[in-house]
Every structure is written in C-alpha cells, then in structure tokens.
Image 1 (cartoon, rainbow, N blue to C red):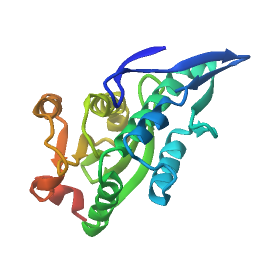
Image 2 (image 1 turned 135 degrees about the vertical axis):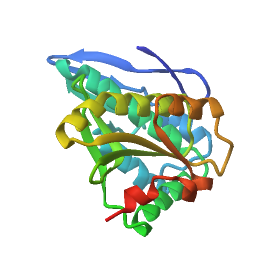
Image 3 (image 1 turned 180 degrees about the vertical axis):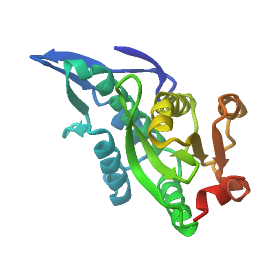
Length: 226
C-alpha cells in the first residue's frame, strides 16, 4: 500500500497490509529499521533501544526478531492502525538525526527547569475517531498547549502535527472551555530548518520554538505561570 510520505532516502513509504479473519495486519516489511541502521544508527545501543521501546509503546506497535514493525487491528480500526504505524515509522526516522536522544532529554529538562506542569504522551481522540498522541499537553487557566518535539523537521512530521492539532482542537476546546494552541519544538542546532515548513505553521497559526532561540518564545510566561 503506497503512501504519499517520503522515507529516509526520499523513496515513498509503503505499508504492507493483509486481512486475517476479523483483523487487519499492517507491516513495514522491515524497511524502517533497516534504513535507520544503514545511516549508522545502532538500535542495540542502550539509549537507542530505550527510545525505540518508548516509540513502540507509544503507538502500540510490535517488532519481531527480523526488525519488522507489526500492528494487528480490528477491521473497523484500520485508519487508526495506519496512523499509528506511520507515526512509528516517522519517529524512528527522526532517531537518525544526530543528537536526537540528547535533544529529547533536553526538552524534558527544559520542562522541569521551567516547572511546567505537563502531561507526557497524552492521547486525545480526534473528530475522525483516531487517537492522536502529543509529547506533552500543558493546561493553563485559559489555554491548553499541545506540544510536540522533533529532532529533524520534515514534511512528514510537520503534516502529522498539523493534522493532529486540527483533529483534536474542537473537541479539546469543547471539553476544557479553553483556547487550544499547537506548539512544535524543533531542533535547529544540527542544520537549518526549511523556512517553508515554518511558514506552514505560521499560516495555520501554530506556534514553533527553534531550540537555538528557545528563550525568545513569547508564551513561556503564560505556560509557566502558577
């Protein structure tokens, strides 16, 4: 099953789908891990293995001994399964960004240093019925921030973030009676970020924080307020 998303080597990402009784089995045929390891990423190193386990747990995807990603869902949950599999593949691709582990740790440290009361890895159901997971959700008296951190901003994780915020914002606004703001934290220390991708966030009135200029983000006072 072809998708419109690009892999590490600018080839189209494919999902492999088969029916099994009342279930649908999705797989990447081992391409994601294999591609990541060809960049020199050692998935068996303790830090990488821990991050991989977190990603797999986050999206409820399993991995077999040959490095194949697998997900089995009921037929009426196919769209959820497709989303979860793609997000897993995007997150593993993001691991190939140099210093991604350190960046994710630094984001967590920033949250703690600023005493931000954030709920990590929070799942929110979108209007389509798909559960979207955000790295952090920060609830303030009048505003709720949906936060995602990416080590390497590309069209794939940009599209997934925009879709996630768009899917859940109306529901969260109804439930919390608060303004909903999307906030993308981007590592720009390794390479410059494509300005067109940042403009896409601006056009949709979504916030972004470049790590090199993180202290300049104007909403920290609102997020950190007690």
